Length: 108
Image: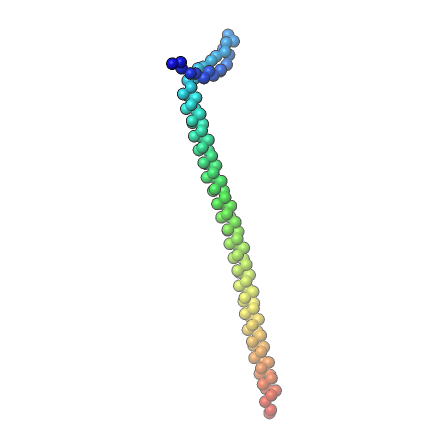
């Protein structure tokens, strides 16, 4: 059975002859298999990195939403306090009005 070789041309030597290096085909198969494994590994790493980037972007988005909600909540608390003060003020005014109208209805 004849052995199959892949001839790799390297360079010319001092006499101008072309240097040839015979590489057995099974070495070529090992190289191709290694290249495929390397490509799959790099593809897996890129997929993992992409998922990590997407998760990071989502986390940053949620953090920004949380900050916005906290500021809205504090604004709503402030408005609620102002409304409560207005309600207290109105109730005290209503009491004064009631006293004034009651005193005007009672004859002296």
